Length: 340
Image (cartoon, rainbow, N blue to C red; front, side, top):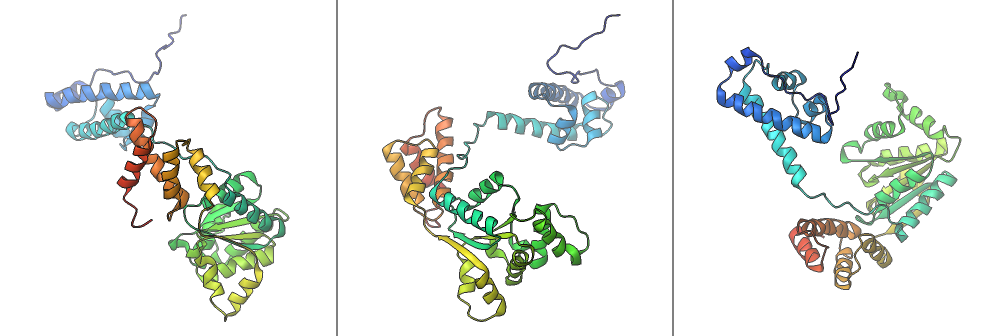
């Protein structure tokens, strides 16, 4: 017995004839639009190798609604579903027509990245508490993520204004460390045990640490003291200055005593700006000079990155290489001179 094999590039998108009740229920204009939309939906799905479940998810439709609509058995108001499918198709076609967004260079081994890595390694090897205060846009978070990706037993949690309290921070740490403890009273110990579990050599990097309240930072000191793990407080200058400005208070004294190393850098190194520009593939002298000036502003390498992305979009749209005029136009269009 011969078995039929479907040799089409993607099966499952056959368009059956609609139910008679479906045809009788809906007006001819809605039915004509439905046939066109169904054909477009199938073509898009086949071209992208999407299943019906994937199209349902992407179009934000209910599973039963899309299935009935596509098969020609939907009992509701056809015009409403047609409208939803049309919006989705337009969005897909618009996205396909847009040029790909230029991506930032992968990790660049800048001087500040090396210094951050060395500071994190010190904390991890000695189970010490370190503070890293580097101005925004110099790549401190990227450097921390790279260190985590290339070293075992490293955890990286980011604090927001909503997780600044002791409990909020503990919840964030539990998520990063994969600690599951329903009893809040036991959460601190559960996190501490996880940090101590590796038998030494554990590092907890707490990013955006300037958001933490004083008691939360003191809790981190407690983790380092009791569970012998490295702690790195990473953020802006407030992380450190808020404590050195105070001369009273037991918690401040304990913290200052426990800080093993403080890495501070408020302006980018010239060599880091040059390395980052080179990572973007920019070599033309005028372009390098302009980007160097942009990199010296507040936001540093981040300013270069955002400007080059916009400049690249301009050039890609015209199918050519980025020029200094593109960079000038991108910087002007970003309109951040006053806040840089």
